[in-house]
Image (cartoon, rainbow, N blue to C red; front, side, top):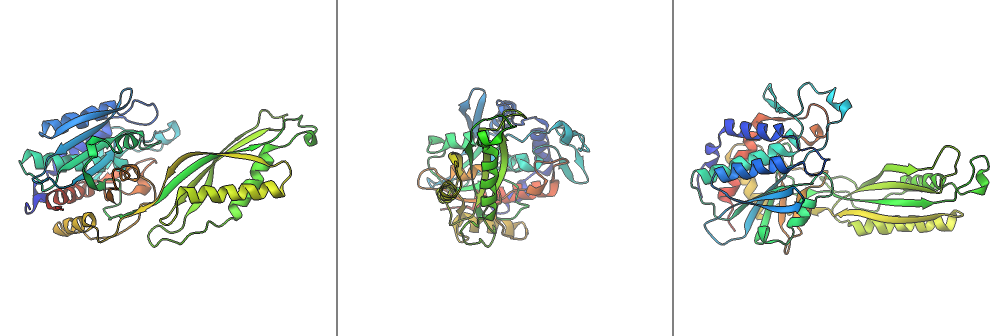
Length: 393
């Protein structure tokens, strides 16, 4: 083990890399936005002597996979971050105090879209891995840095990587999403579906001649709001819940609508599966068919991401604890409220034990004046490099 590898981290380089990443506009949509930032990651890692290649995901969209070979033929550790960001709307832009794509530094914080979610974590991991290679340090295990596309939508990048040779021998993973430098060994699940309620058109002046699909949707939504999802509350994540996040219906102001579609977004805690949720929703719809005349519905499940939890005594968690202790960083635990690429990547092989740890606060993401603390960027890079050199299994 290399002692005090964290002292090799150059704060100015961390700042430069993250500032460069933030300065590259990679908002979704459009759907080829990661190309420029992907080339930046590729060029930077190659300049540090790290073996790097791309995996094509879609036209002009590719993951970047960087690998530093370890001393032994032990399972590899993945460090992962995504390259895309959510958009900045015209109205949101007016609320920014800086240019969202300049990476300005004010009072020790680096501002810009993606600074927290999650170019800060990605950049810190890049510098950590690049620093090892630049100093000729060979870690005990192979280290793989994965920069993905499309995380902010349906995670095409991470799905493309599952069970490929790029991460074939990986057994452990650190997801560099913003956790405010807390260790998050547990993550909520997420699933969502479109539920269509059917009706029959008629002139709005004679509503009894039709069947109002929007009325059926309201009945269903009211039933959802009354229903308590059966589950055990999780110590770090709380309760599971669902929200109606979209509603579409109607053909015109004088027409009884014959169709209404709602999107139901569900957040899960360990002990539940997406399948459990949709069986419960199906049961509610069946009950309404029995109770309500002309109640006709269908479900189209769009995405399923089940929750997961890594035991706190797992080697990747305990190694990160030691890394944090080495740099005098308080060891705090939490649970990740969203979902990440790690949810998909951990499905590879027989499963990859995962922990989420990174700079920034998730509540600052996806909104105006997003920023990440310079101090946290550097601390994250130090924890990453310490973990890279000390993990051995």
